[in-house]
Amino acid sequence: MNSIAKILSHAEASCQTNGARLTDKRKRVLTGLLKSQKAQSAYDLIDYMRKEFDEALQPTTTYRILDFLASENLVHKLHLANKYVACSHISCGHAHEVPQFLICDECSNVKEIGIKKSLINTLTRNVEEAGYVLQSPQLELHCLCQDCASKAV
Amino acid sequence: MNSIAKILSHAEASCQTNGARLTDKRKRVLTGLLKSQKAQSAYDLIDYMRKEFDEALQPTTTYRILDFLASENLVHKLHLANKYVACSHISCGHAHEVPQFLICDECSNVKEIGIKKSLINTLTRNVEEAGYVLQSPQLELHCLCQDCASKAV
DNA sequence: CAATATATGATACGTTATATCATTTCTATT
DNA sequence: AATAGAAATGATATAACGTATCATATATTG
Figure 1 (cartoon, rainbow over the protein chains, first blue to last red):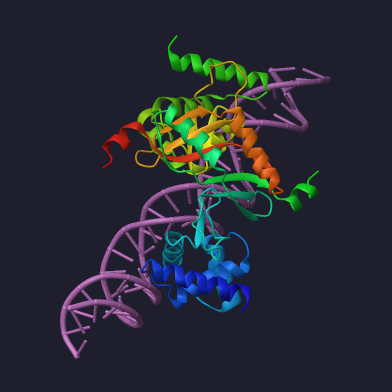
Figure 2 (cartoon, rainbow over the protein chains, first blue to last red; figure 1 turned 60 degrees about the vertical axis):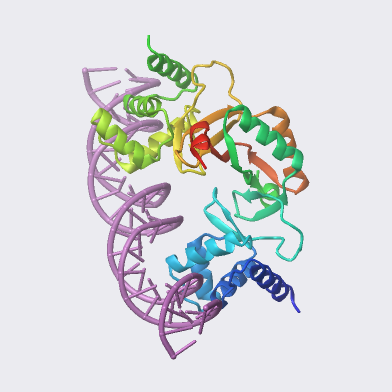
């Protein structure tokens, strides 16, 4: 059983637990995102699915499916980059922490790392001191990846 | 000398120091953003300038001016919200810290707070451990403001 | 099987942002 | 002041991102 098939079966089990349906179409979109191994905009993904899988997706459908996958925590939406990326931890089995994303400004590679508890606490305290309530501590940071950083002058 | 005039004169001085020109048009756009007292999308601002100042701005011009003002640190771009907001500290005189923005998901109010040094350090260390290089530690957080949080059920 | 809920298809449109080339305005130097 | 070069703005078109709406198809439940 290869890695993607394994991830898909985990995804399916997770959906079943939530009473949600991982339909064939949703599965194919998730597979596309997994195979591409990077963050893609909805329109990038439409192109990718057409080229690689000969599957025609409309924007409406694509956004709907991506929203579904995000609501199931199988995919994360990067608001900063307007892109979507498959969750790195679908097969982990444990409850997911709030993700923190490092987005390479050069090549759009995305690394998902766990957020440190102490950081969340500091953040939450900062926000509360300002009289606000934190809705989601998901962080998205403008970075350079190792490759692009070494290429830079 | 009222508050906006004071801010404008600070802004002008700051531009002069950098050898940049705060033209009349740029000054009017900045004034608009200051008077509106909230974050606005480029197109929001175009509407606002037409209604309040009877000034017709084209998208191209508007984006150019907003980019200029951002490059002079007079305005911040909120990537999460696709909006622009006047810097809260134009008249402060001190070197600016990296801003951190609390964006109300309900009413789009934005509060700009200073980022704690220790937080930046933790963040930078996290990123380095992942093999990435942090480009900008500007944080934008999904929040509720005091008003909206109290209204919420 | 029928009724209902959920998912997808199809079309159109609204919003956000940029590319490109022309024109105007400013600045510095003679 | 004249003028050459740089910077700013105008104007048009179009690309990229995202949603509204209504129709149709597929699954689930009683």
